[in-house]
Length: 411
Image (tube, rainbow, N blue to C red; front, top):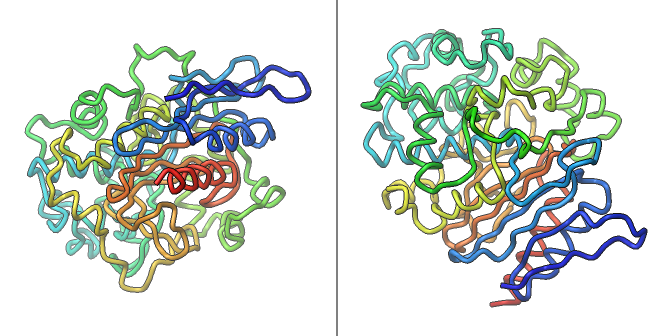
């Protein structure tokens, strides 16, 4: 492993990138540095592991909009939808422990869930965001968002947004609560998702990844989010689908109801606050370092044995859930997306890894974390400056592309 010393910009201003890369992976460091020095990323961190060897571990930029505090190597940030992958991991461990199966009916575990024609929904369909519960009628606030019992009662009573199994759609918040209720109802210790995740995944791997930030965690290690407002989706439009932008202007639309409860036009950065950090929201509220995310995904890239994930469960994650009956078009995001067992998998329009065995998640603003078991890769890139694209954020993608080019040259 070679220590990488970043090059200060020609302006003479303070160098704000650091870390290391393996020999032959210097272009990854240059791409990462370019993202920071361009000003397009306030701060970011990236860790990439291949065949259990850390090849890239970089951090840089600032963790506050005042640009007073540099992003340090073990800092964490609000992970937004990267949290879904953490919930997918927890579900995989729960299935491996025999708490439930992906083919089991949700209503057999949670009888109230059967209301309004949801009785045939399987655990796999629910975790693959096909249950039609993207938007719920329960009015969420930062004060009640941690009341999982009340929210899950509302989800069970909810009429689905579409016929379950016909489509999938971004369950921006509800995925976490559904998974949490399933675990709670079958776990002999009665744990909900945040405690189960801490006990069974983050704790055993000793990583700074949290669903529900503990009081003991040093808040000075949190990189704060520089978000965007609703108007930025138009003014600074990049790759976000125009139909979604238009729907986000219509309070009655499904997209608005799914994505603006509880935000209400404030933009995702409004969630970066103590109440949300503590809540342990299992679809958008994770707090994580890039190192922690990569090392958790590395456990899966290496076959899952460290977490007790069975070969059958790994094979299911690698294969992926069956597509919705009416295709991949996300009923919320208005673009195709392949959701599977709490993760997103590559498909023809978004091949983020070299093989289709990969699974992971991207997040609003440009962050991405995944593993590719066939290729032996675990990858995490996080930022606190939220872009307005969907996936393949250019700041992240140039780092990932540089990595794969170097990996191919190494072979």
